[in-house]
Image (cartoon, rainbow, N blue to C red):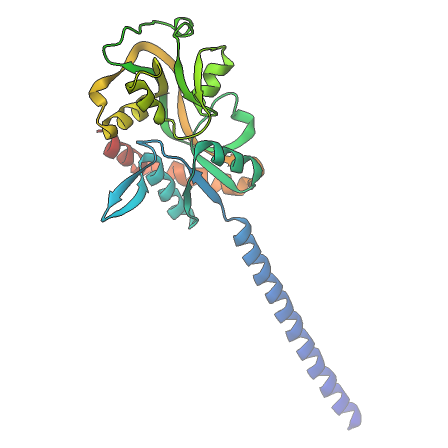
Length: 267
């Protein structure tokens, strides 16, 4: 009788022990799952760069919109990411991207100098970089070599045009150390610089928004670079995140979503 009671108690103790072990491992599993979600959160950054990213007033409230904004938000929705997109000055965003794993920056031109610095998701948009001049000015050149003889080319430090022109030997760069690159448009209109190198659509869109579209024109037949805009991720970002975001973008392209977004802004 005593032996039977001891066996029952032992069995009950075993059952309690098994339940405690299950609860322990379930708790650990939840903790690891929560940590995994936390680890997969991203710091997503951008700058003002119309028509790809820009603020517009809606019901007395400024909201960020644009081609790349809508594409990235569509990717976020598809992968279940709810992280806020931060709008920062370009140079500050670049510094944060270099320091923080699981961070991303768009719209980033994928240049040879940047290729090995980041992991890439894209392309988001085509990119053609050209020189704009003030309409009616006597600035004329037909090649990149001739462009090196222009007195002042207005650029912003660390933007793609600055990096490209500097790397191919341009010594005539009038460099702004900070601020949005479209400030160079204002400098162009005021005659403080001779030409402004930027993305073709970005230049036209900025001029339209500032009401000076009829005051600038692109230098014909001279292209600084033809390429694409991407999401640039910190090198230590998990490859699973990169593949997930790329697959989502590819699906959005197949579904016609990306084309519809482009058509909306480029018409």
